[in-house]
Amino acid sequence: MFDFRPTPGTPKPEAYRQLRESADALTAGEPDAVANMANIAALLWDFLPDLNWSGFYRVIDGELVLGPFMGRPACIRIPMSQGVCGMAAASGATQLVEDVHAFPGHIACDAVTNSELVVPVKRDGEVVAVIDLDSPRKARFDGDDAAGIETIAAMLSERI
Image (cartoon, rainbow, N blue to C red; front, top):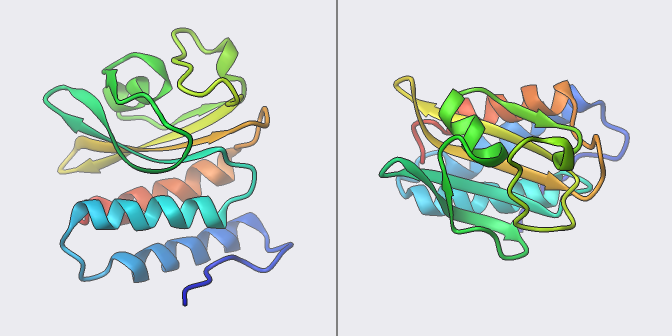
């Protein structure tokens, strides 16, 4: 049985180091991208507090298509440059949004979401997917969260 949760009170940088090691252990040597995304979506859901959605959107034929996730049903297709996920994919830059309702063009797949962190997964300089984390709490995510998920995205770039 896997239990990757950090000890309560663990400082964020250390918790994200542990999360990255867990993600590496779960995906090392597994060639199936869907299996790896599914395990990482579940790991993020289990590991990080105050989430209502964790998962992936994949870049397919110039748009984002829903990948493995944990949470309530979600938008299936998102045009590039639209919403937080589309902006992350189009720009290739992490999007850290404290209040999604103030984000121009926000796509409300789940009305419960109040803050969002979206990190592009790049392979050979091209965005192939995004990791999307949603929270019902405003300002749930900070720079430590962004940096931690960016290390996971970099590690996953050849595994999804």
